[in-house]
Amino acid sequence: MSERQTGTDRVKRGLAEMLRGGVIMDVVDAAQAKIAEDAGAVAVMALERVPADIRRDGGVAR
Image 1 (tube, rainbow, N blue to C red):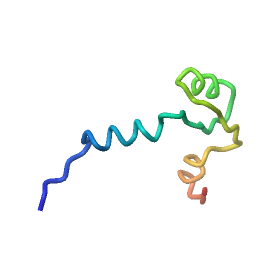
Image 2: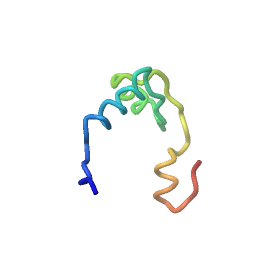
Image 3: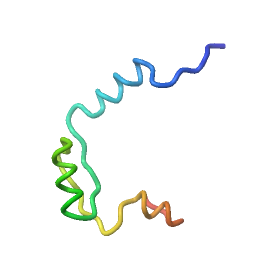
Image 4: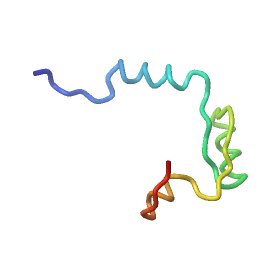
């Protein structure tokens, strides 16, 4: 049985490959949209609540 590794080269390269074309970020206000844009987001989705906040409060977000 092989030893489990985290942050392996394969994982890092895979993540970079997935993000190559850019990412779409969920934002709730203009300040977050600006941060996302500055960080390289190719698009933003303005939502009343982001899925992470809905899940944190016990809701279901898909």
